[in-house]
Amino acid sequence: MRLRNTRANWGAVAKFLHWVVAIAILGNMGLGLYAAGLPMSPAQMDAFFWHKSVGLTVLGLVVLRILWRLANPTPELPPTMSAWQRVAAHCSHFALYLLMIAMPLSGWVIHSASGFPMQLYGLFEVPNIVPESADQSAVQDGAAIVHYWLFIAICVLVVLHVLAALKHHFVNGDGVLVRMLPFSRASDPIRGG
Image 1 (cartoon, rainbow, N blue to C red):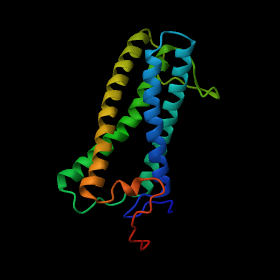
Image 2 (image 1 turned 45 degrees about the vertical axis):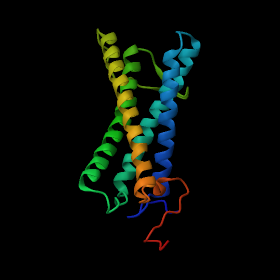
Image 3 (image 1 turned 60 degrees about the vertical axis):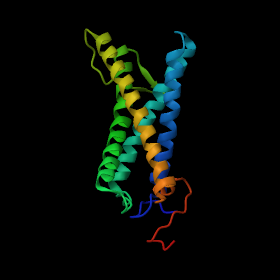
Image 4 (image 1 turned 135 degrees about the vertical axis):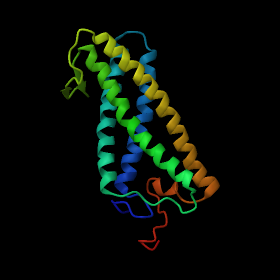
C-alpha cells in the first residue's frame, strides 16, 4: 500500500488520519454528551477531562491531516460527477476541515475562560488561549454557545458526508467510498491494478 496519494487513490497516511480523526470525533461527541448529562460530580469532571484531551488531540491530528493534504494532492473526482456535485464536494470538505478546527478551539476557549489549568491526558499543562478579563463568564458562555452550534453543524455535515459516500458506492458505483476504506485495494491505474 502506498503511503502517498495517487491521482486515483488515497494513500495509507491519508486513510489512517481520516479514520483516526473520524473515530476520535464520533467518540468525543458521545463523551461530551455523556459528560454534559452527568450531575456536577467527580465523574463529570473526569468525563470532561477526557473530552478535552481527546478534543485537543483531534485538533493536532487535523492540523497534521491538513498539512499532509497540502503536500499530497487529493485523488481526482470521478469524471461522471456534475459541476455542482464537484463544487458541493469541495465546499463540504472545506466546511468539515473548518469545523474540525473550530470545534476543539471553541472548547479550548470555554476551558481557558474558566481560569483553571487544563492538562492534556495528565501529562502536561496546556496554556490558556483566552487572556484574563473582568468578564470571563461572558466569554465562557459565548464560547459554549458557539461550541454547541458547531456540534450541530458537524453532526449535519458528517451525516451528509456519510450519505454522499454511500450514494457514490451504491448508486454511482464509482469507487469513491472504496478508495478511502482501510486496506482497500481499489484499482489504481498508476499501479496497473
